[in-house]
Length: 73
Image 1 (cartoon, rainbow, N blue to C red):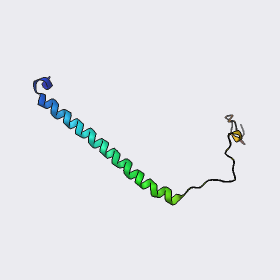
Image 2: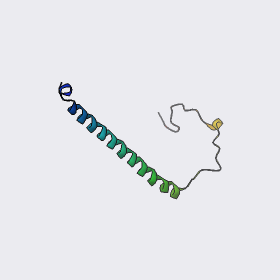
Image 3: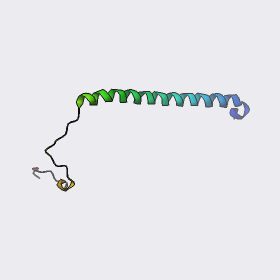
Image 4: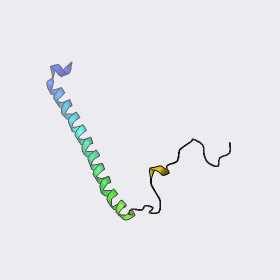
């Protein structure tokens, strides 16, 4: 009810919410940028490793029956 009687209150609350949401967005973007910048050297140091003598063909995929091999029931 005081919003209708005092529009300045509504304006103050509105701008406070806008500033808080904007600050949260900036903080999240800053965290994302810093994490991306930290990931780049980590992957550059790690390098790419993959197996060259293995076939990754879809025909080699085995059916999953839900039973563990070698497990005695």
